[in-house]
Length: 556
Image (cartoon, rainbow, N blue to C red):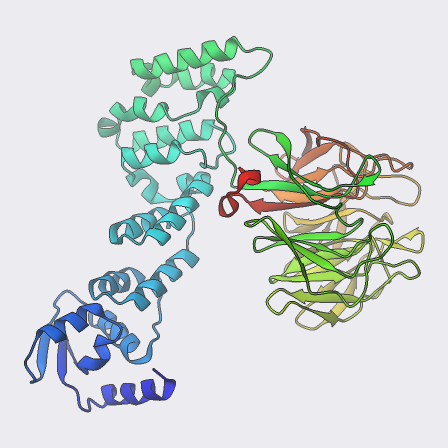
């Protein structure tokens, strides 16, 4: 119905004009129009069509609250409803009872948007009760992906049945950094009602991947828990696991590792001094890299790369003969490439960032000039729009977003590295200079981490550096942090499971390629070596993508 028609019908409802039915709920009564209620509700349609009387019909629903019935009638007359945390459960129940698909969908959308570690189990059970399969799947996947937070924050975890918990911890998709967490979660669940649950210990421990645990944890912790020691089935499982691990001194035995919720992709760059055509994937659970995709042609050199809404965008750069203004988009679900909106300028060594689901491309250079211009891409309109230019001409600068602003740090002008940094406010379309870095550098990695702006490595005009500095935008000062293990420039940088990863790059004045990968934990303030790339690669782009929405062969 049109808006005008809705307005007329609502006015008739409010004035009780030409009403031909009455709905009573508890201590309230509503005069309604049968024809209006028949539209959105299969229940009322069947009810009114089954009653042949032409007189005013009265129907009583004693279990429905007046507030919820008012919302249902509001939807019937206006096709809109306001869903809140206070009303969603009752509104969903009554919408299901009265078979009103529009309200059901609105409630399910609301619950999906509000999914968090505290409510996901309740939402999962609610969706299962009403057989809302899409919402049930979304909530279930959320539990798997955020299992550690769910165990710690969700009171409903302790109310799971043994069958539900067994199903969850048996899944490959269960996202836990260490297998010991699964064991400790079981203990937590059993101890909530020990008399009822102790007998389930063997069933649950059978789903724990004991071979993924450190041997000393099995010996010193698992085997000494009374819940394990007092259960012969558990004792035998632990003994068998210890025997297997002790007999595999050179290499850990094969066992199915959990699948991470996110994976790291390393895209393009240089390999063997030639532009690379491949994408490598890093699995944090197995500490393993593998080539998962090879393009028909090499990726552009010194392009920018971002991930947004299931797509990887490669922006600008150069090929053997040309500087590029083109942008190509790789759809992870279909594994297909498509050229999208073209930038206003060809930009090599471009700085890119994502803010509010839009892509920013800043600075860069061509054969003759270094730019200070910047532009923004809206994927919905497939168009680039010029924004205010930066204060400095710069190329090969690092960029990141923090607190709703885009930051650009360092880079080069002609052959000189820059120490200047600036930030862009999209609300005012203005760039503001921030305090300079202590060290001028180009080709550095820049990322928002720990509520600060981190600048790592780069080239200072004389050498490749490993220094790390962090800028606090609230107090407007820089501080020095633990340096990386390996100096490098033009490397990939991402956050994965709240740890900072640096990947590949160039490592000396001869632009020798680097295969080294390391990660930094803000809690320990320590850099740790992880598995090398399959081959040394420089000028590499990296991004982190969700694994579950893109279950295709190369993300398995």
